Length: 167
Image (cartoon, rainbow, N blue to C red; front, side, top):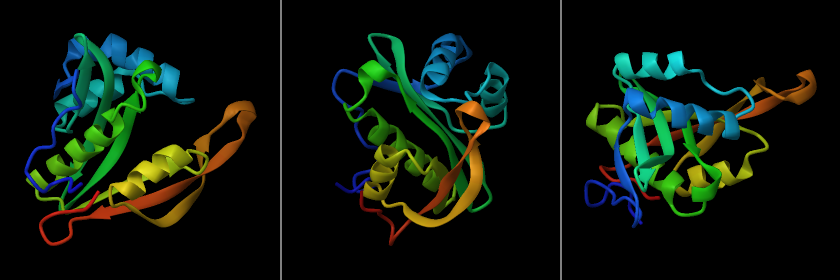
């Protein structure tokens, strides 16, 4: 599948996508606490909303099932967060959110997107590689873990290739 081949990628059947609203924050923060050892707080999401970051949400029955955050920088972007609630995983929401964020990066003139992912998060790494990201380095002891330990991050990059990127 070409992520950008036909413009916008379709939201998976049974789901709806739109920009994140302040009213989404209670459910977003619930998912954050479920998914991440060091979850973002509400102020981080509010700051992202007010600084022009891209924050799509995916809804299932009018309830937030997943979301993403993309920071647009000059000629590049950083994928900061992609999270899907447990009941909605393995239904294409993560892939849809990543594709949506890559499209947003291109619309904002950013043909490169960077991200960090936990070394242990092989599922996300596989998805990102399928979407055209490549590992370009690592960050030692980047993520906090239980019991005061630290985990390395894989640094990944996606680049637009000739107007359309394979996924």
